Length: 316
Image 1 (cartoon, rainbow, N blue to C red):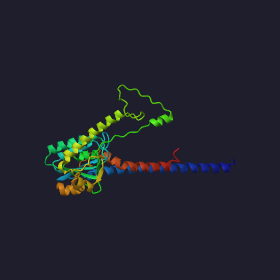
Image 2: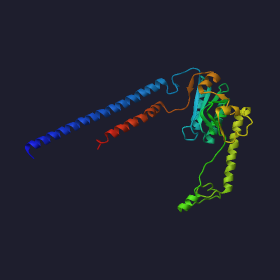
Image 3: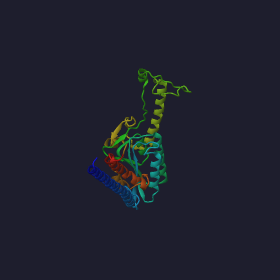
Image 4: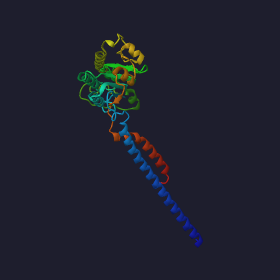
């Protein structure tokens, strides 16, 4: 290589190294700006949540109000909607000296009869402890099965004309794979102590005596459900043989059957029935930092993902 070519090669190398250093500095600045922006968003989010008192305004506002406790989704122990959380919200709502009435806002397809029963029992206790504080259920989209089990404990029930209400029944689901394992050539091996310990095993043929036993168990739970509804609704229930069959109806039909008392939203019930139009939400939530983190977390993850994809070609 001639001296001239060597000099040109050295110049190009120096130029590449310089450009790489400049690009690295730019990349560092971009990351710096990104993380500073992230911290700023988090900080202002905390301030905003503290000022607004969250989505429900339950930190700043005081004075007479209608308390709201939400029961949303499947009712299950360990789930987002469970007896412990709902009861915690109800107790706080009744305890507040400015609560003029409580709305249990329900949007649930049902769930565990045990969890629903615990909430039902707690509502009855609270009604006895706070006789001058009414509690009303307001149904949004759906109040079925265990959801209605809970609603039946309140003094009255309101819904939208298109809300779905009912499904007063009990079910148990399962599958049978006996033919499948025979075709595949799988041998089922099950050891038990107790004649019926393996009953309703999906890999074994159905035994009629075991199936009939479960029908009696479900029928017993169904009768418990019926008693709870009759106790809660009393003479408002119409003499209709379809009410306890597991069928479901819309809001307008439910009025005629005595399953609900009228049409209304949480706001209209608070204003017209309870007489305190301002709503204050007592549904238990994560603490303020968790709430802010949850709000911005998805956005941050999305932005971070895009940045990493853009930088992927150079991060070696």
